[in-house]
Image (cartoon, rainbow, N blue to C red; front, side, top):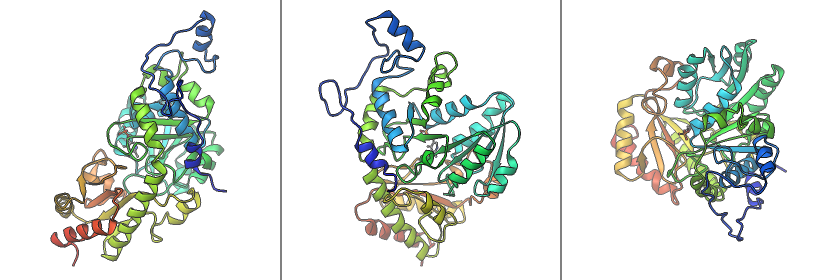
Length: 400
Ligand SMILES: *Cc1c(COP(=O)(O)O)cnc(C)c1O
């Protein structure tokens, strides 16, 4: 039996104190105790089920964190005010000044900027490697390396990370493998494949409504507890916690995530075939021609497809802009950054979400200036959407 994250979520026994099927929002910053000793025990992390202060734990956040942990098959989770909050807090918790990190060269632009620019403050060096080249990963490891960082499906080139192999390299060197699974919720459960920490931007597919930013960290009890330790926990002391109202609204959306992922994948697979047939260089992990196709197949949970992200290469930024403007005018979707929304979103990666990556490096990693990234929406009739896209391609002279 394959791991089924949707059933894990379905089986959660979460309801409110009045039997309310959607647990009531706990809009309290602090919590009262009947006995002074319970408060002391809670401070020391010893009182199970007691809440102390909402920067540490809040019941609404706990429900969402438990749902994320269930989906990932980890012992525990913790929810943050943004995906960057989850990523930076996790990395800062794992390193000290003078340490070294090995990271995929293709990552989310904000993550790249944090690793390449911000961590310089702490004299932390980062080696950026082609994450699909396991020899290069291994060769980059130094005595002071603390972690390997990657994304299951990297942004924006949609490379696939070999998580079991990367976990083996990490374990051999006694370091951590941290994986951002934002593009592939349900589809892949990295912790079950050996990742030590899984980080998320919930802003994208998991919430799926584009009405907030949020993030999550999924890991062992020990790791989450050390992050929220009142004395030296990075999450507790930097305070990137999610608001409980948001936790409550995201929790409701998680229960439809499996249906949405199937539809995103179905629609993306349809468009990827059409783009390929139209003669465009098309990057989609569901295409057998994608170099990571078989690897992703070997790692994925059943039934959720290959995801909702596609990239096509129009070679020049001018052609990319013309196409995107025409598609927006014809209601294909919106010219916008971000992903995982119910409507299709498209953007030119090099000029937007990867603009933090210097242009020279963009070329080196194979990011063409004409790369258009699609987050394919939940369109009920994807053939109809394709006909609109085809029209736009013809209008801007890309397709005969
Ligand atoms: C958007 C995104 C992030 C950052 O998340 P925010 O919620 O915007 O802070 C991190 N990683 C990936 C892969 C993303 O797409």
